[in-house]
Amino acid sequence: MMTAPVKDAAAPASGAEIKIRIRNLYKVFPTKKGPFTALDDINLDIPRGCFFMIVGPSGCGKTTLLRILAGLDEHTSGTLEISAPARNRPGNSMVFQGDSLFPWMNVWDNAAYGLAMRGRPKAEIKEVVGHYLNRTGLAKFHDLYPHQLSGGMRQRVSIARCFANDPDILLMDEPFSALDEQNKVLLQEELLRIWEETRKTVMFITHSVDEAVTLGDRIMIMTAHPGRTKVMVDVPFERPRSVLELRARPQYGELVYNIWGHLKDEVQRARAQDEGR
Image (cartoon, rainbow, N blue to C red; front, side, top):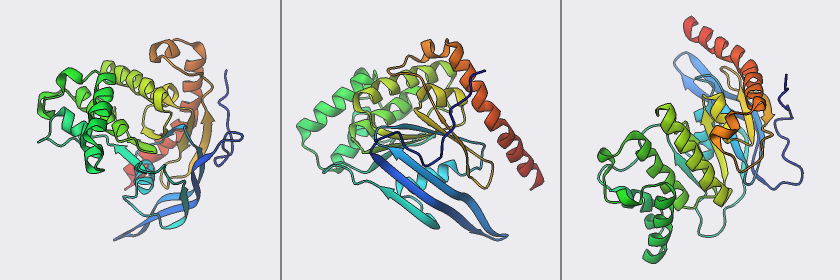
């Protein structure tokens, strides 16, 4: 049986530039029943260009951590350091689990939104948005509105919008969880192809161990509440990757099985916590 490589949670790849550094990070929410600790002593070093995956049971603080990185929430204590983005580039863009498109805008305007808000020249917007609509197979649907698109197509618009905005960090909160398996595989393939072009730093939350192994360079497995780092796993598969070819390898199944072994107890503990409330 293949054993997943386990390393210190804060250990980066040798010589890699650190994009995100987290030390002793806690997030505590006040509630009527008293303080609720969502994140408990998180320590991470994420290298620039890393496709970093987070897996854990429901309620373990995955989304809370992503919101803190996005600047939508503040941590209670500890330190969070993110190296400054290049000039004229936004720090991050986020792809949410649900539909986050503007319903009154067509595909083109949704994809161009970030660039337009930054006041980029029209010629640049035309070139960049056209490129990413082509890459996501949406060019011929550029004038349609979100209500005219399938769920998978709407998520492709969200991905095109994020990459077109050229953020330093891409934050993704279970973006494919509501899709059927066929559309999920197609979007995973598209995401990998686009990421190969840009090699952006990505932090991606998923409940799917398969998805974590398929997409990621490194996987953080979190404990049930309160959210801590249980184990780090390095994904040994080379890039570029083909989703279906990768899943046909015996080593792929062994790694998925190994990770599930780490995760299973936490999922059961989270379920017991829910039943005890």
